[in-house]
Length: 269
Image (cartoon, rainbow, N blue to C red; front, side, top):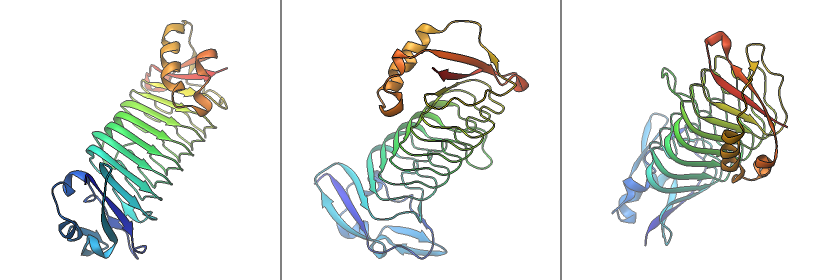
């Protein structure tokens, strides 16, 4: 036995703080002990067995089956191993994770991947607002790692992003890459209004529809062929709308000049 399989018994009536669902927390425990791990459900503290059936599995890590859209903080501060969820998850999925892998075969709620610093987060469905952003009251968003969204992203995606790579295969809402400090965002679909608002540094690649460039961004005069080939090859491994990037040309716009920014919006032609 190397890992654990959790199967949801029924959807909870209220939201659940699921940060205790961690491979590290379950290491060395017997099934009966795992069933007694507590989760906060509204104002109640209940044993895990109230929500899940617990079974051993051969694969390393933790597998969870069921609609977890009311379970928040799945993969919170994940520091290694692997969590796989076959279903939707709630807010803060993969937030503050440092290493390891979280895979969600469904949608994720608000603030997915916020302040993640390492590891890999993959969401097969859509993510809510403030993905790869900052927690309320914090100055820094995503700080490292790789975050892949197969569907669409909500508003303020990549807000205050500081490092790492965010790949969105679908569309993104308004204020994509707002107040971005560094890192890379690649978008395969259509972006909403106010792209790059307050952007300081970093790169945003538009592999699909090219938005109207904001007035506070200006065309770049210098060529960046070598940089583009390195970046394009790295993004191409994600497939889909990014697969053919190395063979395509680009136009770069620099800004946000209203914030003395030196970021770049890269339109792929």
